[in-house]
Amino acid sequence: MSAAMNDAIEVEIPPRPDYVSLVRVVVAAAAELEPSLEPARVDDLRVAVSEATTNAIQAHIRSGCTSPVRVSCHCSGGQVSVVVRDEGPGFDADAVLDTSPAESPVRLGRESGMGISIIRALADEFHIRSSPRGTEACLILKSS
Amino acid sequence: MADGCRALTLDLSELDFVDSFGVGAVVAALKRLRQRGGELALVCPTPRIRRVFEICDLDRIIAIGDSIDAVTGSRATGAAAPSA
Image (tube, helix red, strand yellow):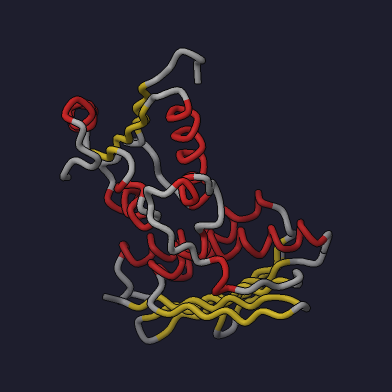
């Protein structure tokens, strides 16, 4: 792992699931330095960042990519923005949204794939830019 | 989960964090129980933990309550989601 600090905190992690908790801790610690961001919003940030980082790591694992996953975090003006970059094969973000009813057998059959929905629900802004060369997921959380 | 188990209550009172992996594990347990005619309930008094399950709509298909009494009571009456 490497980390550098200027305006932003940048973390590079090996594409391994056991590094997700490290990213969660680092980003939450940075967010707690932003005085106007309420603890509940930091809790939301922990979950959202965890989901985005997990998706990035899974993209590397599935494609056999050993390059690091990069996470940058910038806090200012009562908001935290986090960008998670991977070098996986990319995906169609709209296609992973499951709009089937919760009670449906299709929905109950899914034990994964809920990460994007969770991020969308928790973040104030969430943008994905994905191509065959990689994916950049940007999420922003603001004070209430 | 024992083969004969048909009603399972997971007490998440001490849980500090959950994400989609945790939700997926709960869904997997729910599927196994329903395949044998069983049911699952969650004791989840921590709002930020409960919120993740609610985002995934699990509160619409299983009982989630603040205490064991709340979820076992809703199971007896057939309610899906007891009020907090």
